[in-house]
Length: 308
Image 1 (tube, rainbow, N blue to C red):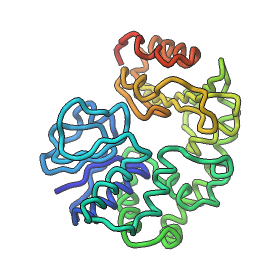
Image 2 (spheres, rainbow, N blue to C red):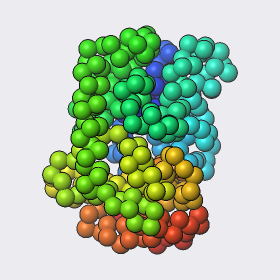
Image 3 (tube, helix red, strand yellow):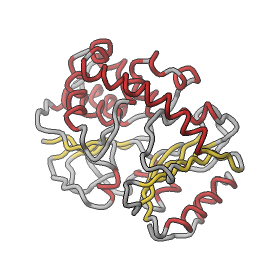
């Protein structure tokens, strides 16, 4: 039996819970959602997948993204919920295979994955250990697999104070704090607000800055949603597109997950992403921008089906 999940905070906590509930000690397969959507990941019938699009080859599946809502029978649980970890925790607690030990961890995973944050948490994540820890989880061509596995082991056995004190975690937390300071300057330089949508375009930059993805909402409070664009590598073959509702207001009506699912991406109602072919992206971006500018709840249902 093997756990297959995504390298973000929710995915890591999913792995913690599944290891405890199912007594799994095999290596975790870390994959990104688009690898499942494109059939690039080899999935087996004894795999437990979590926080990823559904694969019919798996044995069990747990998820909460609206764009991944299944239209077929499967073993596991799908539920629109703040986090996939919360879906797993509820399932196994009802089966008496997990107790209340991870209540705090799952509560904070819900808060982080649902972006249920306040201004102070966004501006000063260093004062909130779970939030700061979540920001240390990044995927740069799978170079951090050892770190993700380390976090799973730590969170299984230790409380948050001990996890943050781990030398490797502590080093990465310090790096995140420095990155966030620089990231604010990049956002201010490369963001413009059009029709109440903030558009951050990092494509002119050779090195894409890392930083707090919610910071834009405190810097541009007039925007009801944000769009971020960047190339996925020096070859400029693909454009990575991220869209999110402003977490501090409820004025955006567009279901982001459903909109981006039309272009091979997906996500939640309030946030999502997709990868676009740079050569054919202009028309797609034009359509997406227009839908966001209109802020029309139903416009995404009529968007042109452009190739990605």
